[in-house]
Amino acid sequence: MRILVRLLSTLLALAAAAAGALLALEVAWQWWRPGSAPLLVPWPAWQAALAGVRWDSTATRLAAALTALGGLLLVLAAAAARHRTVRLREPAPGVSGTLTPRALARLVGTHVRAREDVAAATVTASATRVRVRVTGARDAGAELAPDVTEAVSTVLSGLPLARTPRLSVAVEPSGERR
Image 1 (tube, helix red, strand yellow):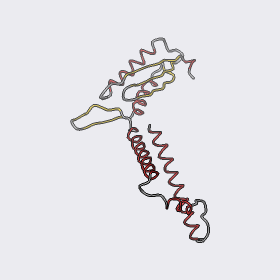
Image 2 (cartoon, one colour; image 1 turned 60 degrees about the horizontal axis):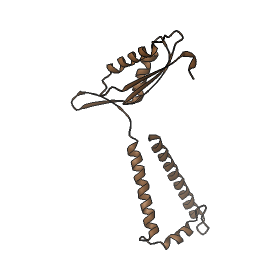
Image 3 (cartoon, rainbow, N blue to C red; image 1 turned 30 degrees about the horizontal axis):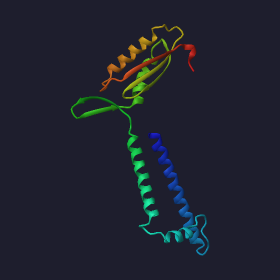
Image 4 (cartoon, rainbow, N blue to C red; image 1 turned 180 degrees about the vertical axis):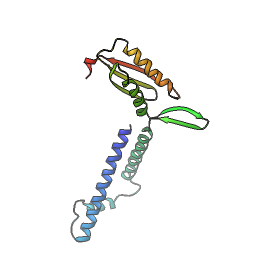
């Protein structure tokens, strides 16, 4: 959802910048040649067309309703795009702490990659789940998955997490890594 908000923000900023540049061009053109036709935007025709529209007309009310609906959708999209965090236990009353999922994934990944029987590891984390994909070294045995699971569980239990996330470990043999 955050990508949607960033994309919409970028598009709206580009549209506002383009409209501002177009307005500056039109104003400069009219100052330079006051009697000539508009440069790009047919604003005299728009002015004549809008002169006959009343504030209580259906078209005006529909445009206002669509603008309000679009604004409401933008506000809802921005509200849904909250920053994801992993909550930590409160060290003292009234003191709270958080950890980003990326930091949690880096911490777990560092510990997993430090093992001698692991050739490579990919870790994704959220507040509710930690996923570890491990590629074993050539001499890694069949007990790699339980060993990695135990190592990651030890790391997670050592952190002051408010809620311990679920853990899933997938092991790929060293020759099957994509």
